[in-house]
Length: 204
Length: 228
Image (cartoon, rainbow over all chains, first blue to last red; front, side, top):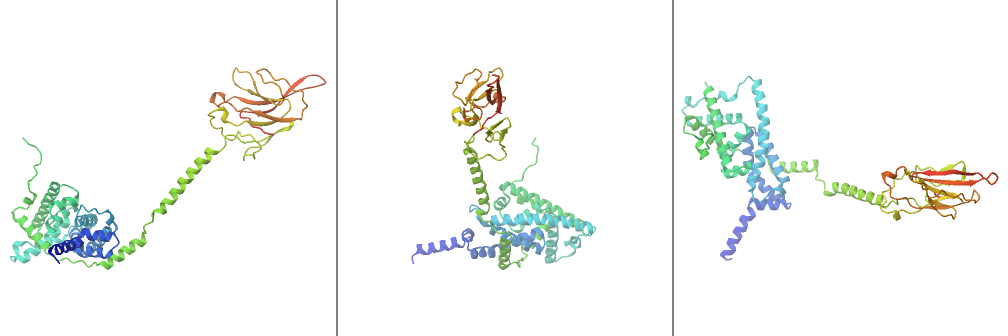
């Protein structure tokens, strides 16, 4: 086999294995292609859902819902957008809706519990010199702070700082410009920082 | 002086170097390195897709297209049927529902066919388009068109071979009881001004002993259509 054939096969292999090619096959009724897409992206979808809702069972429901919705709407997917962008848009919409409902529920629970928040049990870093412990404590603190943020701020932190999506993709997911995406991330970070600061100040 | 909020050039500068920002970034790093593995698998998703397709099966296009097509066909057929209904009944046709026969006690031989008063008269585009109507009447009967303000009665048909004129009709000496068909000319185009116009069928007789003439109104209608 000559070099051109090898290159051609390699290119063909890459093309066949791409998300867009699998979507085309799935559209034609090849459920195996959709299975491959599911296996490839299910962890990412679950991560976003979990970080948005903070609950594992909710996140698993959202993951299933997102792939179900993607399967049912494959004919609407346009090739000009990346499949992952389209999928992230689906999961963020579902997760945002679920997170808003959970936020209301959580607020009610807080009122009933007299404001006894679980994050108040988190200690300060000043009392523990161990960096690993501090890291774990900060993770818990930030997670709690994220749960307190409005869903639209939380989504920006999840996409930019946890999933490390670039601004262009965030803009595509949100349907806005890159500048608009940067602005939203900026506001979300300020909100998170202020929330963490409040928590640290309240911690004895 | 420039008012308003100044947009930062790079939003990444939002994470400052202060202690709080550093702690936030530390927490985010820890969260990022978390291992998250969903327990949801493809089999559960397959079941869900199957359940969803069973719960809400996609209906083929004909499910909604068939009633729409039937409605359109019915509407089209009704439109064609209305257009093809003749504007006037033909001689000898069966009476339409709801239209009663008219019989006068003083003219037992005159039995009017069902009139078409109940049927709406379509706007006549040309007088020749309307078919002639036939009336059974005894010999000597005359059909007059009356009703226009200031207009004299006009003979529109007669059952005997007498000349139609604007003058009052002469009574025919034929024996009462004979009847023959009167071919009434079609009405002129109906307008709102002619709403009071009537066709009156009159039978004039002459008493052979006294010589007195009398006229009996046999039929009167705004839209006379009587047949023998």
